Length: 145
View (cartoon, helix red, strand yellow):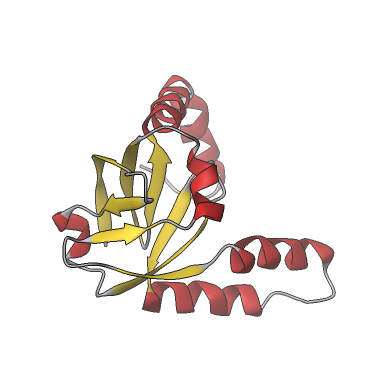
């Protein structure tokens, strides 16, 4: 399980260091894909296979299913970790992070999210300001804290 928040940079070649605490559960290869927010998702190979199976089970005749399947699968890339624990974010996915060199990596249970530091800061501020409303939404979904 991935958890925590870590700040790292991205170099000109698109290399990002994955913190040692996050690497413990990764293996030598990961899958990177677009995220639903302005971020990237990083999965273990097994985690990606589980997620991809769920996408493949969606009904092909439903246009919403096709769009979400295309969104994730077209952006998915296998990446090897180098000896320094870095991955190379491909140029087509780097654009999601913008031009900023400072990143925030967030452990999200079954995946890691990579955000530009400013986008993460803005996002978490918005979440914090709306916590009461979000808590009520969770109650409506059947989750009590």
